[in-house]
Image (cartoon, rainbow, N blue to C red; front, top):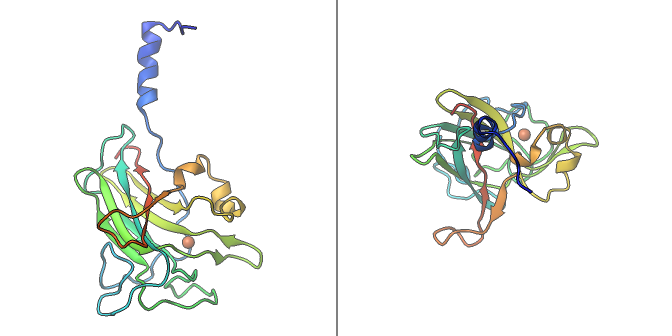
Length: 205
Ligand SMILES: [Fe+2]
């Protein structure tokens, strides 16, 4: 059956179809880095001057930062922070009884390229307790600053049983937009690595 839309209705409908919705916001949480590491870069899996690599599943996190029209946001500042594979943040306020990893940075920052692309190298964060009975699922905190829009949010992982038990995740509208897609490594990457692909939409870029 053909939809009988007037020319005016069609014109009104078209911009709405082309619009992307902004990535849902999430709390900054209690563990935003109290002091920044000296090597602020896009590789969280090593610490400058230390020979080892962080424990855990090696992970590249990549995607595009776009505005609501799908246009790339070039030069956006993307900051990430996360706990280590054991679920511990390098933060004085973290009382979780899990070990720090001396080879894990926990914080990274990068600017998007001409296609709006960002890429971090890290390890998959662990889950951590927030009360006697509740655990936060693995997630990576993001603070993304474009030319006109800044958002604070969190990336989640697919097929995590803790996701649907997490108060913060559950109460988020369009929460599926916060879940990365996990794929295998590219040729030039470590064979054991995974890639988390996650695009970010800043309303006005
Ligand atoms: Fe967190």
